[in-house]
Image (cartoon, rainbow, N blue to C red; front, side, top):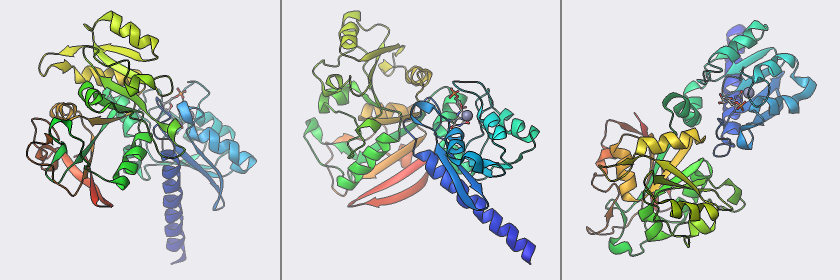
Length: 376
Ligand code: AOF
Ligand code: ZN
């Protein structure tokens, strides 16, 4: 009947506007840290009157942006937002208060903010002011988009994404660092986009010595979206002549070293614009204590961390159970039995056949494939 049809239409509209808010929120991914990348849409009589997303550095918040654009049209309107509006006095007054002041009639919120300063208080404040509040639309999708924020609040570490580009026979490189093409152009573009959507990118000193990488996002017009570059370098072996150190003034470079690494090396790196961060070393395997590394990064505000290699770093993150998401790119050619294995001592089945991960999505990128796994 007519009533049921109306309610179905309203539900479909809610879904559409929330999906738009989610898409807008994702625009900020990789540059709102330490804050989550939130999206907001304000709708009045079926028409969008304001859109907003969290700005670089985490301020202004998404709702404030959308309210500013809507102006007077916000009165009596509905706000769709991908995370509970904040209720605390942080770097500016609470969004919940701004929503109340603007006279909105209804708020559709995807999920509660786990930040203990908010944690339900935002929704409660809106309800107390007489606003109709619906929580939970697209909650799973929002939790995935805000995985970095949730992980940082809940586990005091970033959401960790491991990227692996393997040959048909599961190698990430040829013997003796002989140059070898594993994946093609479409895969490269996809990885650079992923870099832009992460707060920081991490490699081991072995990769720096072997490849002298730059680790920036080199998509046209997106240089400013490069993540913070992080190197695990227990005894400060990174060269002052590396491309990473040379570019440290344009794109931040953080070198994670053990408490015991020599001070003069750290001072020299510091003078070149690099930040040296000291953490505890681990004896087995010899290196840095990975939980300590992740804790230090989250203390500095990193919510989404991309781990890009090499095989020892990848293997130790998987072995330690510290990987939340895996991007497995696979090229069509084989490298040979003497190639570099993807996860060092671990077989790749530690991911692909593991109960700990489930395949979330698969794509074809030219001649390559991309499988995205997430924590089961
Ligand atoms: C929102 N909308 O767009 C974002 C929110 O340091 P502050 O004052 O910017 O507050 C940061 C906290 O606010 C952050 O930890 C998270 O709980 C929330 N982020 N909230 O209402 C937004 N980015
Ligand atoms: Zn806010």
